[in-house]
Picture 1 (cartoon, one colour):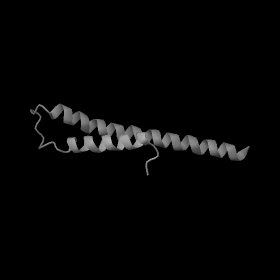
Picture 2 (cartoon, rainbow, N blue to C red; picture 1 turned 90 degrees about the horizontal axis):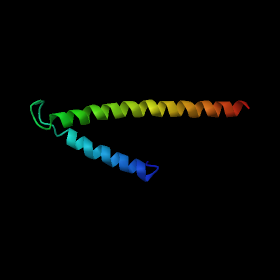
Picture 3 (cartoon, rainbow, N blue to C red; picture 1 turned 45 degrees about the vertical axis):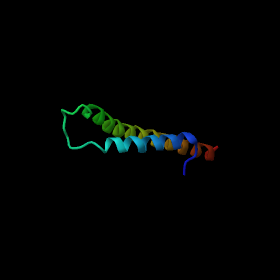
Picture 4 (cartoon, helix red, strand yellow; picture 1 turned 90 degrees about the vertical axis):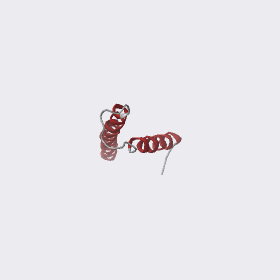
Length: 72
């Protein structure tokens, strides 16, 4: 499942930060922790989006390289 220790570390960090972000009680913007939790939430969304884009670009590049290798 995991190909390296780096992937395992990333997975553990993501799981640990997700539990902190989901512990946000209600939607109280006056709380001292509100900015941090909102940053974690939107940061996770941005990270997922960027990861999906980079994954798609890498797969596309690999497919193009394999296709060009078959033609030569």
